[in-house]
Image (cartoon, rainbow, N blue to C red; front, side, top):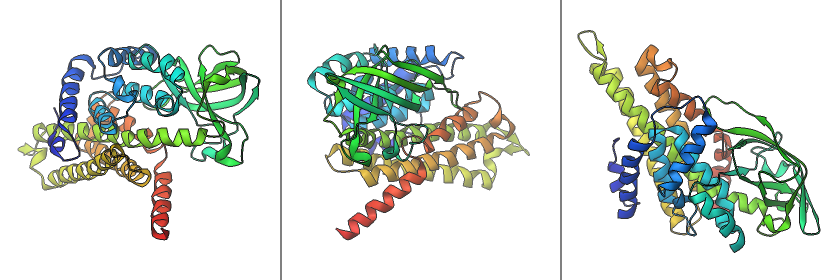
Length: 380
């Protein structure tokens, strides 16, 4: 088990410490330290395992415990990136229902998600509307008791294997972000199709979705008309911090691997660890990880106290994902040629970390958010 001294920090309660230790022991027995060639099947299997063991319920409960979600993501990421993905997407995909769904919607979807019996997806991005959510073109018009969806979504995690999608569409109540609504679209909804499966450097189920006069019951709208942007941002406020926690898990694993490699690699009548250059690199890696962890768990703790975390979550994601990229790159360097060998742990981590600097708000967007919030505070 990696260094867990951070669990003694005052951000956590005893239940969080117990959760992290129990999950680490469970993951060591139930999560393989590699990926299979059939990513869809592996992801479905992981969702079922995580649900059956009770871990997913922490991301779908009536009261969201951000610290618990972050600890789970950090722990799973340290063991297996796809296990972290499977857990996170269950939470993100159903998060809008958890936060703002009707009692009927919650009853229909959340118990199955929590048990791993249904796979959820969050469909926000479009070909021309990624960071600029207000530019989305996918639309929905209301006809009686139905919503008719037309358009596309892309880069959708769990695309192709999900049982339902939370889809954000322009409904036109007002210009820009104020004219967006959220709908639950079941995989067998008429007019919905998986237009394309997308392969990326860290294999995950990903797809482009197409809606051609796709009909869904108006009862599937989450929140009021025109409130979809608020629903999306509330959901991302929870899970943006957890992306940072996943980055921590990747970084901690990279440091563990680098320490072992440095201590055992024979070189010039000693080991790689004997060199001051190596020691300096390891020191920087450890310092980067602890610095990011403080920001991550500050944001998680602050949200659990009922406080706003827009700036703090952005700081956490920026520092943790950029820092983890540096840590993992340093680990690859310590491994030398083996570091770029396919399916070596550090090579896999190198591929896993890169998307985290983009999804749920690219690093540049986090910088804009932090700057905007600082200026708001100054004016206030």
